[in-house]
Amino acid sequence: MTAPLLAEAHRLAAAGRAAEAIALYDQVLAQDPAAADAANNAGVLLRRQGAEAAARRRYRQALAAMPEHADAGWNLGRLLLDQGEADEAFLHLRRAAALRPGWERWHGLGRACQARSDLAGAEAAYRQALAAKPDAVETLNNLGTTLQAAGQLDAALPLLDRALALAPDHADLHYNRSLLLMLMGRWAEGWREHEWRWRAPGFLSPRRRFDSPAWDGRPLEGTLLLHWEQGLGDTIQFLRYLGAARRRVRRLVLEVQPPLLPLLHDRPSADLVLPSGTPLPPHAAHAPLLSLPHLLGDAAPRPVPPYLSAEPERAARWARRLGGEAPLVGLVWAGNPRHANDSNRSIPLGLLAPLLEQGGMRWVSLQVGPRAADIAAAGLGGRMIDAAPALTDFAETAAALAQIDLLITVDTAVVHLAGALGRPCWLLLPFAPDWRWGRQDEGCAWYGSLRLWRQPAPGDWASVMARIADSLRRR
Image 1: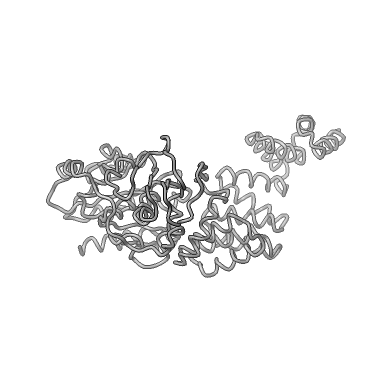
Image 2: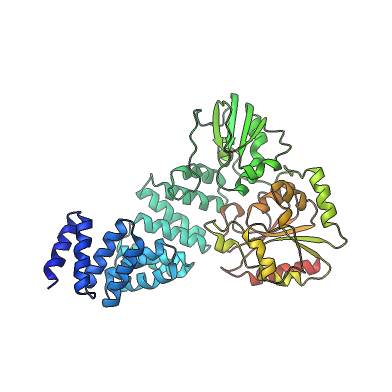
């Protein structure tokens, strides 16, 4: 009989004696592999110990024995969701919510729908969760971000406001609210809220620690250190504020990511430019680049004259390499694969086929990284110049951009480089764009040389390409 062993295993688990409990659950399962409760409970304890593969096996064993075991399905679904397997997680969590409905189950189902980009399903699940628990802060937060992704910005903001009234110090709420406010064009409020980003657990750039105090934006009789944060494109975009910061301090030192250093060959606003990882000189205060709009009181973005330039010698080499009679159009179809929103921002190279059919143009790929191999895989080596092998740093990319007549790109660092250089650029935007691109219009608030091409519905790149192809024909 396994009942006494099972009861003792439950007692040990409740007492926090996990190793002993797991050993007894294993004994039970050795005698009765269909003991679903033993398998599920062992899975719970194994996951707490970090043994996720073993936990998955036990959850599946429980479900094989009892497909309607609500807890095993719930536990397996949450584990799969945390491991990035959203499609299978959705199936288990949907059943778990049906078997034992309640706030926690509906909220978990909403997370799975959100991870699968099923915005309608996520909204429905989160609203069910709120019906069960109206003051659930995490659900209000997630429903707000879901509605934002669906383009319902005016409906999203009251949810975040309501959540903040319940949890005023919730950093993720403040951070999400900042991105929503800036997407809505409410820049002053957005930048102020954006200062919460350092406390948000999901923010990817950890706060830097220095011996100097944080700069408050007031005139400084000393050296100010400005340092990079987030991505390469963010650094390029916010270099525009160097001049305004320099006018308030006696000396300015700029720290950037090493790949950007060759690009900054002529930065009159910075007294010294250093790559990260090198020793920093003494400084009286420090500030991250993306805090400058807030610190300088320069909230609303506006196009500015080009503030970067290509090195003449590099540009001359690229002019010889890319010279020709027909207009030259550059293409970039993929960004950083590690970016959280890469699946929405990057596109398959095949979607650009309607553009490559346009006559009277030459095409050059400025795509770098692993996706540069898409050209050969798609058999398009004869249709475009592959510049990737020579794009060894951003200075080379700048010199190449100086030769092209138009860049067509997804949302990645090269769009900021083109904008900072003042080069003509068409930016392909998903239906739910990043905060910096706003929610409407073809014009860009940051760069005068950009034209924004927006998806009319989630996932609809085909109509975007058709409109671009038509515009190229008319050009």
